[in-house]
Length: 233
Image 1 (cartoon, rainbow, N blue to C red):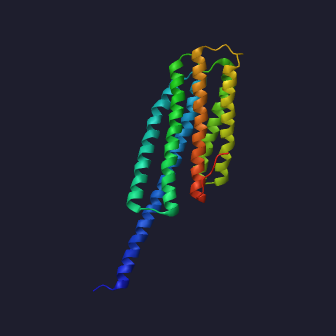
Image 2: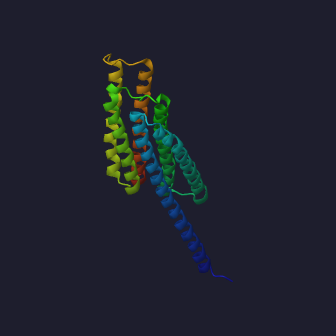
Image 3: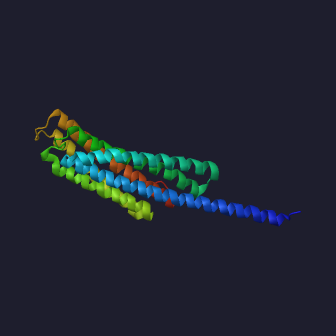
């Protein structure tokens, strides 16, 4: 007959094994979020360039590559649900899994916004979608979005809360640039067609929303580390 202590040792060993599997799954989720973020970086860089230069081939690349981002989100979400169902995590572990679900959704949306910009570039080809008087302003929007995308990847890799909070600053810049497009289109100093006004308004909004989702990802990193919700100022 097996002793009670032997049974306890067997159960403890099983728990340790399950814990190691769970930790490995969490690490894999983290790596995949970083990989997903890198795809988003590439997408927004190429989409902005296509918008500014009427590069049809580049726009097509962004539109096609968005399928990979969508597929990664679906895979991540399914794995997170399985982890919750099979491992029944609590406290900080549950916080990490739920945050991974939300971050993958934000990254997927950032990829969609990049695709929307690429679709606008394709729609207006062979003309450049951005009116010449607004080329510099949209160049700044593009640069800020590319920078914030890189910062998101860095935050996901390092889990640095101070770096995550700094993303606010670039998001504020995107917000200001977004407002400048309104001033430019409504100021009466530019001769724009109705279609150009719509295009400018939509594309500037896509850049602005891209920044909002970046802040959302950064806030989830802070939440994982501290257990406290970070409020964007």
